[in-house]
Image (cartoon, rainbow, N blue to C red):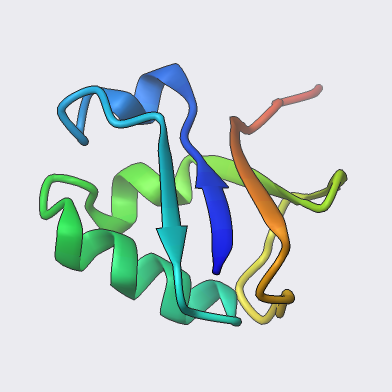
Length: 81
């Protein structure tokens, strides 16, 4: 199962859970699985974060896929200007 690591900001919505394993292999299914376990993790909250999949940072991961042994790390999006 893929391992999801939640940022400290997201842990506020998961009662402090930092790591979670998912059976999903797509970003969209992973978000669905997370939201089933943690209803406070809304799409708006998750949407404020980018994700690193196996070390590669992806700002807009909507169609991303990953392997069952992947590590997914949510990070706050960086705004530039």
